[in-house]
Image 1 (cartoon, one colour):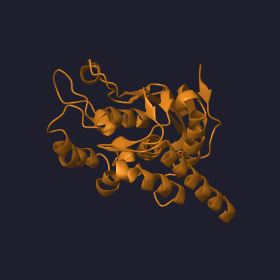
Image 2 (cartoon, one colour):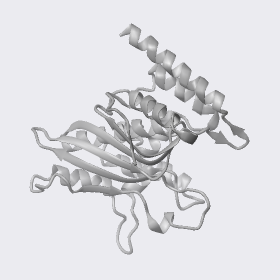
Image 3 (cartoon, one colour):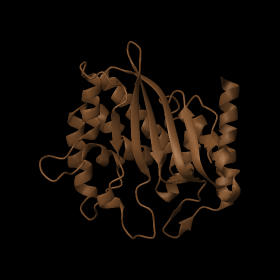
Length: 262
């Protein structure tokens, strides 16, 4: 059982079509939703009126689009410090604050660059992948896997969820330069609160890897093993179905105006 979303040109279009499909399912939820985006770097502009509609809706719930995207790839640290220096800057300035009282910072980027091991320094999975992609002696194009699920942190008896993004699989397609593709698997996916920011963050992650490894950015595929058109909440504030539907209508209006202006 799966729900295929027709391939979309960019992140914003993919978000809307995925929400449309899942929203139409019983209970506004579905399993094994497959989203494919031809150019995940496009549509990642916070100034896009369509993105602003979603962002304005999410801000009262403390989940702006940029906040969610930054959990996957903190792009402004990369722009400011460059690679590999931004890894240490992120650890010093962000992780030092958010990890004082818990084992899970909420940043998937932390899990990409800081995997503890029994002895020695933590593993920076992301930078090792970039290094192997740049290594001309590495001939295999299908050996760039990055795990975000951590059984030590994530297997417990909590009645609630934990991490949602579980696994990333990068592939290189032949060519000169080679083309980078990415498949991301989510255990659970909130399509209103998280999906747009997730897609933008994954696109930025791909752009980073491609730039550092001298590759072209190719398609992004996201598999949501469980997806729901949720009603975001924070403390005593919870969005109603009417508010979600009003936001989607405003998004569609912004999209129609954009199409007319094109």
